[in-house]
Image (cartoon, rainbow, N blue to C red; front, side, top):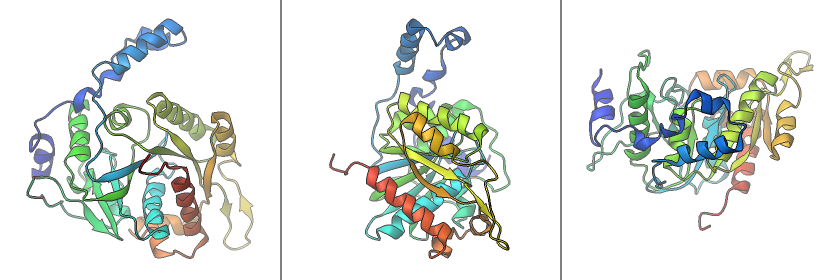
Length: 314
């Protein structure tokens, strides 16, 4: 175990199991399978509320926006990175942070072209790494790039607790949080420990992805996190030669899901080679090609996100 893993798990704050964040999973299998019963629903609500930590804001952060998906591989991290950059590009007076809480598969270091370990402040807090004007923190800064994180739940919860509480963000207007896929321990821990201003759900139009996106949206509603809307990623592919458009993953699936959930689609992102190349080279498209149609799509999504946020004074 490297020095930063030791610090993350054992340094500073004593090792704890995420303030009881695993309590929501404490029901029996029989209880989960019988969730259709109103009595069992009430019992599950009681279990979910038992021992939960009191939400405490992240010091210096005005609003927290989580970017989530039910399924991996739908472009959630790419969306989170470009959303953070788009928020900054749309209003240069705003200070933006990007927190990657995908412990097992952090993507932010590569996408934001950042390497190295964070420095520690005099108060023993980790200082985010900075690039393109965005303050970034990720598990990827604390372990070697090729080193797998082979941890059980309690260690993961301890790491999440420190990523939430042991970072010196300074003063931020928006903190964009790149969540891991799914609806498990990490998602619940983040949602129950800090006040979240709103969630953005990312999905492709494919039915399989939409099924999990539906679950993700319902999870946030159950923990009282406002869902701002859906981003339909990889919505269409346009041949660069003949310009023919093909809906590889289906057409308007996220729009149909949004109607079912009573939400809106914040925007469509096409399946485009430029987006993938820009992300892989650590130069996100909103930064490297701000005049491209793809970058403008992210910029419009950022406008829609801000429009749906409450004012910081509310």
